[in-house]
Image (cartoon, rainbow, N blue to C red; front, side, top):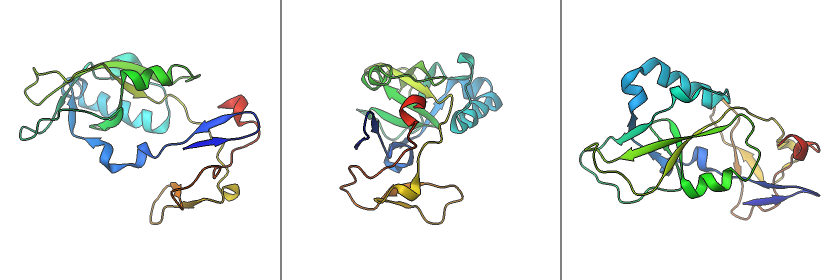
Length: 171
């Protein structure tokens, strides 16, 4: 979805709440130091930057019974957000602040058969609170959640999000 303001464009996605983008992977960092790996995931969810050493260099698909032939452009791999090279190229066109991309090699369960293409762990390094839900007529709060998660009311949600006026200077 694309939303326009007077002088800025905002792209919105439901990728971070889309359960079809959850894949079972185990990272080499998890096998080396489970506590540090869990901490890096926790920090990314909170938008706190982490150092390069806390992210996996290799990840292995968990299921010995299923072989994946293709992965989406963005997905969660064992709690770590992973993006394709093409997706990373798009992200790099924008000011990411403290958010970083870390190269990662992806393998099938046998740990020797690589997935085609290049991938990167997406390490969120900050958050920005510029969304104004009370002025966003085409969204609704997802019920029964401990945190505020918003979703579109309809499939046609163009021009349905409102942001603070100074969002373009901070986003």
